[in-house]
Image 1 (cartoon, rainbow, N blue to C red):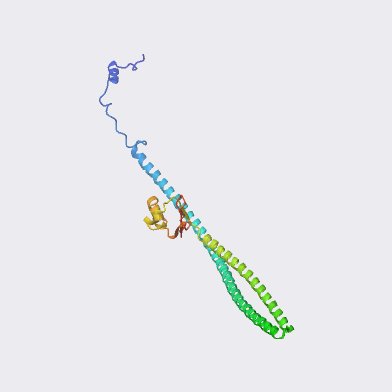
Image 2: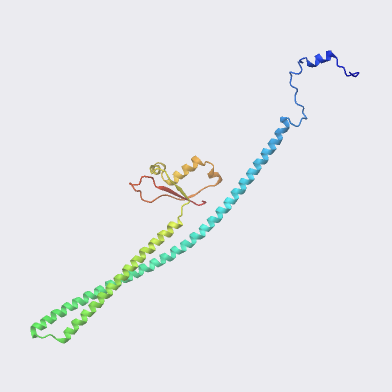
Length: 260
């Protein structure tokens, strides 16, 4: 063995002997890169960056949603304006049809009065003929012509009344169709935004109307939505309008808001 390489046995025993200092953990060095003190600021910074990114994405999505909603609302307003114009046009047609029906009814009354006058004249002429026949036993040709003329006038008046009755029936049918068209257009203008199903009919009496039912649902399930996006209810009603006692399920609730 080379000189200076031999170990002292005493030192070997000292190396393997348990030391009281080794049981005490050595405190981490302040400059060590893997300590908790140095990792916490990095983690905190990373979390802050993540939160900022999430906020940016949320605000961006909210802005896009608001812009899209505004465009749809503008398109709906334009459609409602056009529909309102159509309703006005149909109402004008309905008013004109009603005026025509009134005028025709007036004409019918006048013709009926004329027919009654003619019939009265005919009866008087018949009595006159019978009287002359009894007196002279002959029938004057002029009186016969007069009777024939009256009969023709009566027949013509009755034909006119029949034609007017047909026209009145057609106008009444047209008026009914126009009324149905107005109802369809109004139903289209009142397009629902929200439909709620499964709410018992008794809730209407307890909460005093479908609008309060909707507000209760929002408060229980989305308590913060009114602060972020206030909603104003324009209409709240059940459909169909009439309650059918034979219906097993409750009627649906239709909610229309200004910003939906």
